[in-house]
Each structure stands twice: as structure tokens, then as C-alpha cells.
Image 1 (cartoon, rainbow, N blue to C red):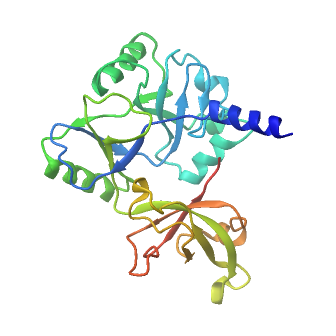
Image 2: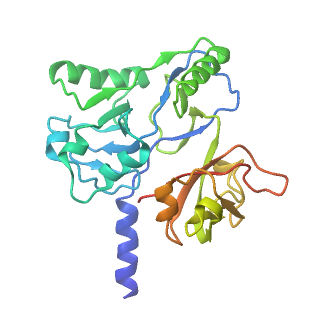
Length: 282
């Protein structure tokens, strides 16, 4: 039994994906870097044969969606501007793909991981492919060269004001890095993090007989530079904002992991103004 368990662990590790992860923009010098919109979609990786989730699990995309995709790897977001994240996620994670639902999505590409050269050169590989093999389901995310930090902040503020999740800025000559990179930064008005739901609290008033809030336990953040600014692992707090009527009628299950956003930490280390975003689907 121990041998079988060990083999399962090794197999899971073998098929897990290591993808580029963004660091926080903290006024690092980004003069000459390339900026783009940060899309609030579902991260996906095309390995030349299948679409995979960020955890390395195969996504059940219909063949009509991935038809004539290239044989080389692509990294990007499954996204549709007119859809909420929950709607995109429901379509992407469905075990039985709905062609009509998938037809509303596009695969927005921000990198060609296995191509050589800097970011512009890597994206040019896909651009040349699409010139010969046009595909409406593949869109290269526009990259804009930034003169200095002031221009990047102005760019970020302008797209956030229009409803965008945030902005990304990347060092154009850096290779694709399968780790959290200092050469790829994100700028958002709110931080986001994950926590485990440990209790569901009844509401009152108009929310009587519904979920009023969720009691959560913070995940990660303890002695972890990658999660600096997040509450320490094990911190207990409540989330009431951001829950839709449907969320209150059918709240996330105890033990499920949710993503939330917050402004900063209070003096006692709890997230200030936490807002529910979504249930994490692995």
C-alpha cells in the first residue's frame, strides 16, 4: 500500500505544471518594459495536444475550440469580456464540454514558453503561425512599451477605471521562467489570497435563513516571501462582502478553498475589508 501511495505522489508531481507566476509591482524600475491588461479569466496552458489547468489537469475543451491550434506550447487566459469569472470557470471546468458555452471564449495568449528569445520574439512565433493558419480562438494579448514608471501607473489606473482586474508589466528580454518571476509584475488595487472555509454563519434581516458570512482560515503567508503582505497561515477571519444571492443560498462547502481580495492587513494581522471572489476549482 505504501508503495502504491508513493507512486501516486510521484505521478502527481510528474504531471504537475510549473508556470510563470507574477510578483507584485512595488515601484521597481520598469522603464522599457512591456505592459498589458491583466485579464480575469481562467489560466490555461496548451502543451501542443491538450489544454491544461494551472494545476496540470486536462481541460475538457471541445475539439471545435482547439482545432488547428499549433503543435507548440502556449500560455494564456480563457476569457470573454462579457462574461463573469464564475461563468467562464463553469464552462471551462465542466466535465462535459458545452460547445455553445466554449464558443463565447477566446484563448488570450501572453507567452510562447518554449520559443527562444525575449517576449516580443516569442510572441512573434505565434503571430507568424496565425498569419499562415488564422484562428479566431487564439488572440495575442497586446503588449505596450512603457517609457517609465509614471506611464505604467497611468496605464494601469486607466484600465482599472474601465473595469479591468489590473495590469501586468514584463521585462522584454527575460526568458519564460517557470517560477515566480521578478521580471513579470502585476499591479492591482486590491491584493488577493486564498483561505479555507471553516464555518458558515447565518445571516440576519434580509439575509435571514441565508449565509450571512463565512469564517475562514488563511492559507500560506507564514515565512513565505512569495506571500508577503498576506495574513499568516492559520489566521481566522470572516468574509461577508462579495457574496451573491446565489452564494448565500448555496454557500461554499466547509473545507473548500476560496479566493478573496483585500486592501491590506490590520494591526492584528487580519485582512482589511475582505471581499469574496470565487471558489477555487482544481
